[in-house]
Length: 446
Image 1 (cartoon, rainbow, N blue to C red):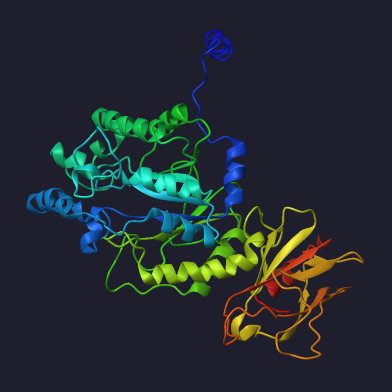
Image 2 (tube, rainbow, N blue to C red; image 1 turned 180 degrees about the horizontal axis):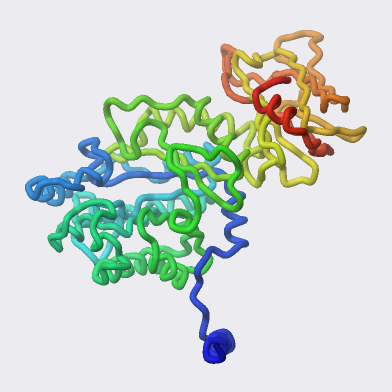
């Protein structure tokens, strides 16, 4: 026991000797939680054929693997690639960080690497795509994140190992010293040649690699591999600490040219609201076309998000969960200011443009100083309506906080903007509810 204590003291006392970092720094995790919303970008050479990214290699025949690894690199040449357009669109949509697939499971590297010939410089494109993406998003003030797969199908193919997802001991870098060394060489390039990287998403076994990544960049936030990152689903309740939900807009991560119905803008905005109400970040995916453009369906959805964020962005960033995350259809987030809450109210047919609506929020307790505002709207005029009363009122009652407001900001020509309206209520306290009251409010009884 004395030897263990002595060894610990030596490590912590000797100048230049540092204990191995085994977790994200708490301050950096708090910074990450404040971001709230990010852009995931899945893109690789098999976007040319509209395939699920990388996974068609798993279990494939030798003939298929040869075609995949030799023919697809010969034709990958995205001549309309403009990462500045991507970055501007992300900024307009209120995205504060990006996570780009530097290397997906196929092993194809989207940067100029010395570790393999299976990379972007061996295509007709012949440019360091990752470098251009990083520089474009930095110009927009967006934090930089990289997706990295510790599993590498091309490595397995070269070493004549069966290709699959964690179905063989040699799929794990911790059990495959050659794969571990290969991954570390790639991580060293990524974390030493492109400046500060803010976020690293390990899609696969991260043991031994995340610790190495922290050695290279101690301020790095490791998401998958260190925190909860549910895919295509949200938890029923808030998760303590940082977490990140990853969602596609359609049914696939990479570009899928056919058979791919997309979510509506309202569904995505509601998903963002629910994620923030539960304390998580939403990482929303785009899958660029083979020529480098973001497909029109996804661009359109991002621009719908951009309009909603132009009005309501303060309710999404730098927020935390309110003690009660929702009352029926009304979601809550806690503002950075003390005793201030945002309430998200469904719009569209449920709260039409120019319509007054009265609310009772059972879990909010007001006082003489309580104030309410409709985020983005001055509550003075409704366009073209003479003598219309658009004023706000707020009143503490025994039942809860009573609010009356008009949805008066005109965002569409036909006045049918379908997305949520946000109320900001200050100088308000949480009013604890009993079990039956909670059940009633969660079920939508108002």
